[in-house]
Image: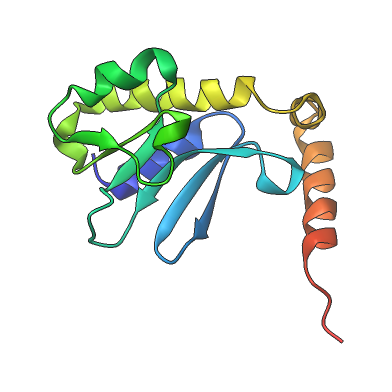
Length: 142
């Protein structure tokens, strides 16, 4: 797996959005950020010590995954049971996809009820609501 195949896979999952944040990080959200979505994975595009990918592991998988060579507590997010990996080859593609599906579901299940309700709307109505919300969040220039 590489960052492009990672993006294709994650964006194929239901209600996943991506943003570019914190310099060179692709952040993947369960639900749109503007309506209360929460991040579940972060792909680091810079070459630093934070690893290539961090994701929510949850308390039940966290310690088990840390036993894998190349996996370590995610910087700034370990307290929320996130792990990071130093290369995409730490897990097989199938294993990594399973871990990322699990991460998305963990976070999705904890979304506020109002956010899940919006995500349950038919696609055209949901897109209108999200677009309206984003417009409200954009700072107005004078």
